[in-house]
Image 1: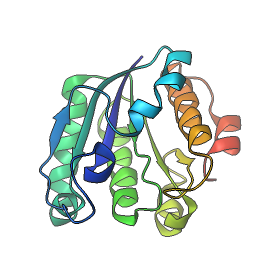
Image 2: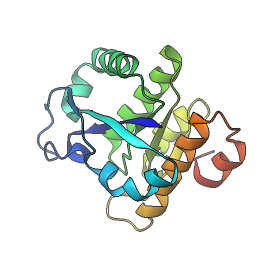
Image 3: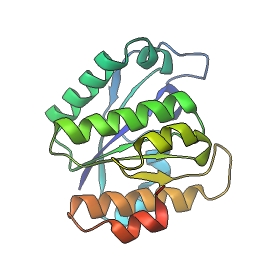
Image 4: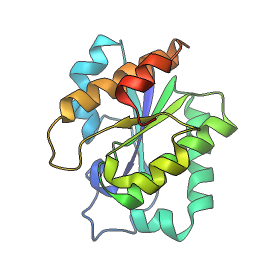
Length: 174
């Protein structure tokens, strides 16, 4: 299973919270949480195809253009699944993750999921009925390995077109 990860500049390792204007970029190797996820990816025969990312400011300055370009890049690279996040408790990244995930689902035939912590309750409320949002701890919280494993389980179910009802109850915001 080929997977694309979508990150902000922090999770991609391309900058700090102050480096908000990092341009839209592609990394062909696993970076950020994808590296920590490798043990769980092996269990589902998953491989990172690419990590797409940009700065929070870049996204916020032109949400529609950045989203359109990310959807276009996903469509061009043709992964089996897209994972947006984990956004943890970063509100701007959570907004980007949910919005981009939603648009990928609307404009491609590629399944996608988002991942974030409960601190993003407004975003979760807005999107939980239209996309799968895997629960994660806030940055530095406990349970990250479980969350990364759950992201892989959901990705695998989406890829295999398995009913996600029970998995959603167990690991996603409802």
